Image (tube, rainbow, N blue to C red):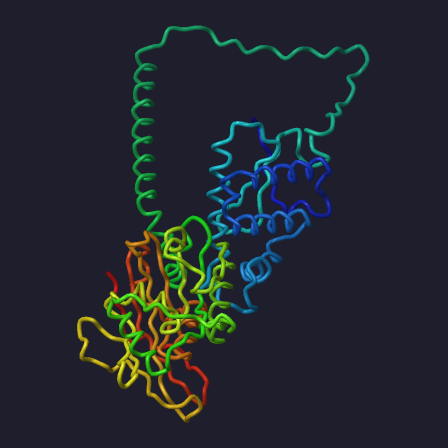
Length: 443
């Protein structure tokens, strides 16, 4: 099938898109986006539609820059860093791959083939010869000058190739051609093999550490559940709380406590704010999510979908599921001191809050970020919680802010490893400072 490849920026004033071509593009796009290769990726759908719209509007490369697309399509802030947050480039690469899969897997007739070349955000439309722009030979008859009177058009002479027996020289040339073709094929297969083996490593190295930290949760089926604590008023004295938490951390089941049915559950404001930032990050990367209260979840929920735990002491799922790891939150039931404990060095209590009031001149808070594949539930858990509210805020910032996430270590680049990150933040006059990574443990 002969196809004429046309760049959209050359089809503006002189060669506008014909109604027939626009109709072909529109129907082609609808069929592509209805295909499972595209349908399951919301990011690809959003970006692909925007590129097509820009093309049919007669736009050129100058109006479709990477940062512009990041702002318009994925809701990024003006002036965001495209190097640390390359969502547009990654999604465009995914579109190229899905387009190739679509055309290879469908045997139907296509009136237009849509391609997106590497390094460009302007689609290429390949129409059949009868579908090219107005004024071309394929859409209008060719006019020829009339012959002088008395002359008739003579048929073109046929070029007859005499049948001859192949000579030994011809047979030798053919043999060498076959050998050369076979060697070329072997080289191509070898190159393709090398590219295939290194494709995964190349794409991984291209992505930011922030994305790769989230990657295991983004790759799972279904939505991500964001679990926030809801502090249910219960009938026990304040001094007993430290004993209850310490007992749960030690592996004992929580006691049965009667809830005050007349009271309304509440969630710490900082936890809500952190959950909002994390849900925004997840949504911007095309992954569905839901927000749930800790008391509304059961262990069965953790088996069906990955969960993001927000908060430490106030989220009892953090205490129940993660206290057996090397780094975990700890509390002294007598002094009520809180710290992050290293199971390999339990006598060390360096990572504890200063114990000062909120608005003193300066204080410190610590937090723990954990990404772990929980074998009991068979799913991924990402937890972010601080000893105090400032630690939780710092952990949420590190996970959701592209600028702050530059501090994430390269240990997160493997999406198959469990990882724990201990953070410290300085609190001045009640304001949380930037998170500072103290130590990292990966296994």
